[in-house]
Length: 599
Image (cartoon, rainbow, N blue to C red):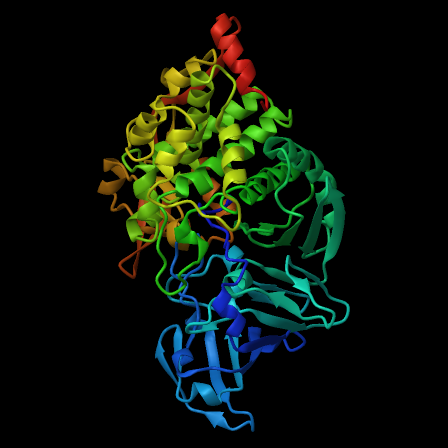
């Protein structure tokens, strides 16, 4: 996943085919009344028949795949009730944040509850990221499955039906398919979470792209962004992606766009992706940003849909288990989204290198002593979550170097693209690779030297050999260049882990002024700072002249404090510079030519 506000990685759910035992599962039919949108509450009912004593717990999600955040959806549930076939209420008891116990599950025929939308419901901590949450307004609704629905203990794999009651004039966008009676057919709970729904006053555009049906549904607050314009803008990316993966491994794909007041980014799924972005005029720059994000999300049809570990094949919504191969799911995907555009001529080489420069700068800010493997395995922890965004920076840079190394070892005949496409065909949606064996599998398919690469740069946190590897392409890399000029220096970095804007890497001068690492930014010169207005207000800090003072309000340990900071100065430096050699050696030229095209 690619995010415009905070860095997250969001893996798709992959359990589409229900196990054999699901054939004996109880009948489950969900219904959501979108005609009643009062109080920001989804009104939900679940018709059920055939529960057993083992199904006595109704579970709401504590998290969702790839969000790497605690959601605790049970916090949003109200008036949870169970009834028998005569409509008599059966005793239920909330036994944890996300679990309700049924006293007589065998008698239950209906469950009802109301659940608040996550966008507008204030919480003290662990705000659900908007692209992973729910919204209910007069002209539209956004449903991410784990934010509205739950499942019975032991029945995560059971098939179900879903009925949405909504205004006749509304359009509904989702990758789910309906039966002849208008019920959405859902293979299991994982499939439900993997299939976001956007309904309301939408526009739609559809096309057949080389045998794959592409649908775009768009909600635009003022109507200025239309699905047909997005489709026109996306054609080049789809063509580039098709050439990169040879053939799309899906027969349909749905893009869901929500344009309103906030920039949050996107969440990828197996047959769809969902975007929450700030509405803006369709300028060339804005259109390019939309396409760039979509190119990342769309490539997830390869990984993790077709290349994934056994660990994420069936997600544990109660106690999730991270996979050490997040570098593959997100880092490689980010690399591919850039390379497919470079090789298709959508961006030129200087633009690609500028993007790589920014990724390396971001890597510096987040710290270089955390390996990709460790970041993957600790992504649910507070420490791992703080620097999770580096999976897109170091992750993509590492994939780029791996591609160059593979091309070098194969004499320019087989790079990372080719290996990924081979793995996609070997595995697929219904065949997972062994979590502990993937490195060995990859090395066996390529070259023994790749084991050393993995040990150093994926399992280990050694400095990436950027100069050495790009030098093989005739591209000179300079990590740091200092000039005599002076420039401003705020004396800290700002980040947004866990949905809060915090100060990071505070230098000694600003520490003396009272500022500390992990302080939360509350206000600047009296203006409150939120994720909603951060993109507009935070840059104003850097308009302060060197030596001038400005006021910030910070929050530390739940208490607010006002501080006076000064804009500092430092020598102007340029970091991570790339320069394409005009006269490469024959070997460099040959390898660069292979690197610049799909083999």
